[in-house]
Image 1 (cartoon, rainbow, N blue to C red):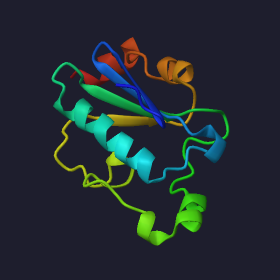
Image 2 (cartoon, one colour):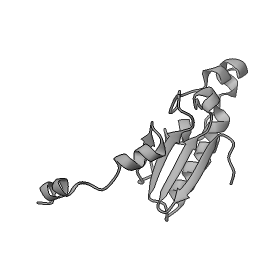
Image 3 (cartoon, helix red, strand yellow):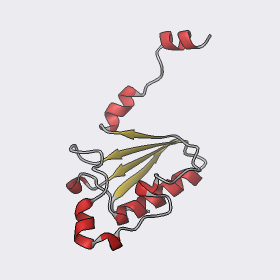
Image 4 (cartoon, rainbow, N blue to C red):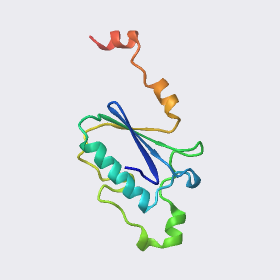
Length: 126
């Protein structure tokens, strides 16, 4: 399924979710929250995906949080939330899978998340 405010990719056992609103510093408004709710539902119920990574498009912000401009333009009555809460995650208490966030590019995250060094593994395997 194609999304307007996020991208969702599965690479092996990893799901990569990218908030795609760089023009608003990836701030979330109700349509983006509902999309993320759908994405994280799929992630939670897919037995082939074990880890989620959340990141933001662009180079200015991971996410500025709530889109205050949207709230000001549309009023508080338009600010609705999915049952899973802000970003589709805040009230999601039943998901046992780890979800990481990356405030840097995915390439930098891969470099930082390599296997532990042999010396670390030797020290902790006792």
